[in-house]
Image (cartoon, rainbow, N blue to C red):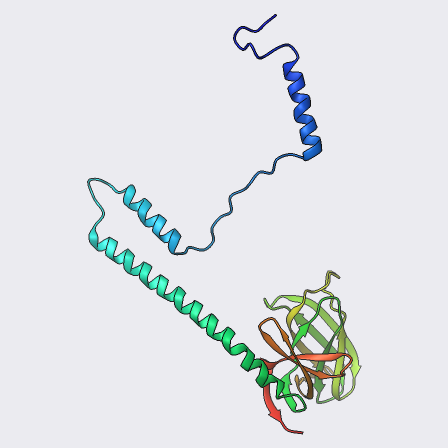
Length: 242
């Protein structure tokens, strides 16, 4: 029987149409649905859109006042000037980076004193945790913190002698997942055999044998040449000649 309301619809047409859609879906996959991303930062374009929308939907009985318009335009002008200043400062910092790197290269061959409680870790590698004990320690506890101040690992050791000490961190967190590359902070507590606390020193003096540039940070290479220790230039507070 012919469908007079829809002549193109014939018996079996829906079944054929479904088979075609299934074959397209099987061969090419389902079409991706684009999701609208939320805007987390407001710029000058968003500011203008908000202001224009506010004017379009103003109350006819209470029209938009000129003073309010002037105040919002002043806010927009201040916002744009601040954005321009930030961009200029970033360009200035980038232009001075080569000079900063060149100055760091002059530290090669010199002794530096830095805070060893701050270290740079490379994912998948071991990192040495260096400190100094003014007395023999029966128990030592080291807490590794990430850049957000979160406790990601605790390491304990026993019966360490007075003087320079070093513990090796396997680069894994407490959940045994590898820690990402970045800057970390260690907090060290120690005590003697009778339970008295020991003031642990995290200052160390090393000779610089190389310089590396990782992102925006300048890193000094010290210690063993084959397995160098990385010290951030900003953590150095003393430089001496040979």
